[in-house]
Amino acid sequence: MYKRILIANRGEIALRIIRACRDLGVETVAIYSEADRDAHYLELADEAFCVGPPRSSESYLKIDRVISAAEIGNVQAIHPGYGFLAENAHFNEICRSCEIDFIGPSPEAMNLLGDKNRARLLAREADVPVVPGSEGLIDNEEMALEIAHEIGFPVLFKASAGGGGKGMRVALNNLSLKQAFQQAQREAEAAFGDGRIYLEKYVEHPRHVEVQVVADQHGNVVHLWERDCSVQRRHQKLIEESPAPHLEPKTREAMCAAAVRMIRAANYTNVGTVEFIVDAEGNFYFIEVNARIQVEHPVTEMVTGIDLIKTQLHIACGEKLPFRQKDITLHGAAIECRINAENPENNFQPSPGPIKHMITPGGPGVRFDSHVYAGYTVSPYYDSMVGKIIVHQPTRTEAIDCMLRALEELRVDGIATTRTRHQEILRHSAFAEARIDTTFVERTWDN
Ligand code: MV4
Image 1 (cartoon, rainbow, N blue to C red):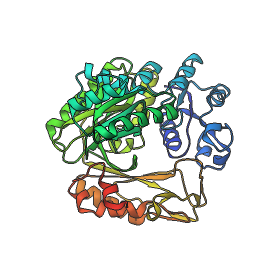
Image 2: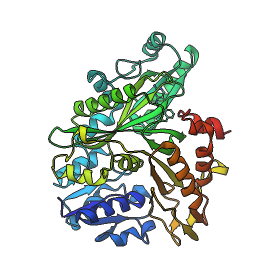
Image 3: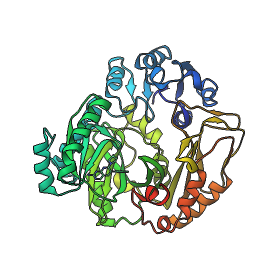
């Protein structure tokens, strides 16, 4: 195991990684921006370096400063967490050239999967179902029109350099196709400096189901079943759960097997997520691979009993997976609510500021992963998540009730939070009956 690693992140995930490292006897070096100077978790790290002013682009995203901290801190590896540099293949390559282990996949796998068109072509080769669409990139409108007529409207243009919902455009008919194509191309060029576009049939009202995969550097690949993340708003997930409710056992098995094929085909190592959409008939289609630990990883930890952060460190330093597929058994149901400092009564407007008073939930089956506390000031510079409540119970119904209790216990004074919206969702009959797709929240609460 490593003696000392650097955590190239902040907030909740930095704290989560520090906790795993303490359990493993690994020393930690933290980095922080001037806005995070007083964060409590910095005291739990063995050393901490300031990497610049509040703006991420001047601190957490500054590769040379992060690498300097790693060199001065004398670490063997860097854990990137999620967001920031986590899926930056260039940073990953620089770590390699500095002989610092990147706790994640290789730069090659990251590059391949970061190109969504290439990832889609690889999925097809690996016999992983993809949404009907173009063979590869779309060069011009005539080509788009031809494919749209083959697969039928509506269709969706996606940026090859995109992902996570960025750079997508729907076309409902012939008339809007040309405009959608040009807009998608322009937006992709502006956002990513890469205007390459591909085309898919637009699947309406899909569920979002993702498979957690773990792969060591010795060819062992194991899936840890799935999470349903359909409860989202404008591509921001609000609630995630495992197992996915209302998924046929055959579909689940086929999806998880497909995820493992995808990970093998990409030569992917460490932990990753294979994202699918599932249509009303239960057909599933590959969307993309998330080459990082995800925010919602705790629900999988609860139902499998496997610590994913510790697993990341074991894999990165070359150890073999200590479990096989047959060793993985799911226990009960887990649900996570992401509590954000946002006002659900005002279009989820961010609500940074000082937390005056705070009471955190607890009791049987409740986990609260959070870096904040009374007296902490939520910064306007970063994402507004202040914590995640994760509950684990024998059944989904009990998990919902347990989460409602935990949400009632949670008190955060001084800032607005999304707590009340979580309560409304969990009390909704459609959620109880798992009649939910990715449009549920916007359909039910927005406009
Ligand atoms: C789709 C789709 C419908 N049809 N692709 C959005 C995030 C990105 N990872 C892929 N996304 C989608 N791709 C086809 N062919 C609908 C979405 C989508 C979505 C997917 C997962 C979770 C939430 C979503 C919200 C809106 C749209």
